[in-house]
View 1 (tube, rainbow, N blue to C red):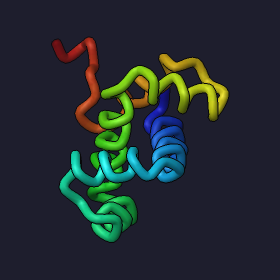
View 2: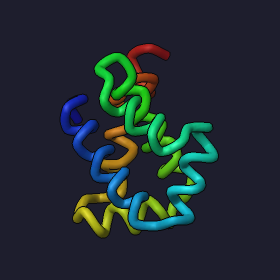
View 3: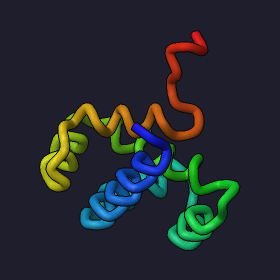
View 4: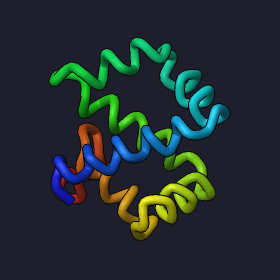
Length: 96
C-alpha cells in the first residue's frame, strides 16, 4: 500500500472513531492530545504521518474495532495493518 493510500485509510479511521464517543475518549487518552491538538497535528506536514500512524495504532489495539471499521469502509481487515506499515514507524521487513 502506498503512503498516500494509507493516509486516506487512516483519515477514514478518524471518521469511524469520531462516530463513537468511547473510541474518541480512548484515542485522546492514549495520545494525550485534546481535540484541537489532534486537529493541529493533522494539519501540519511534519506531523500528519505520525499522527495518522498513531490513529491506526489505536484502532489496531482491538480486533473488534478493526473488524467493524473494515466492514464500514468495505475493505479486508488486513488492509488496516498494511496501511499502518506504510506510515512512519511501520514495520518494513527489509529493515529487520
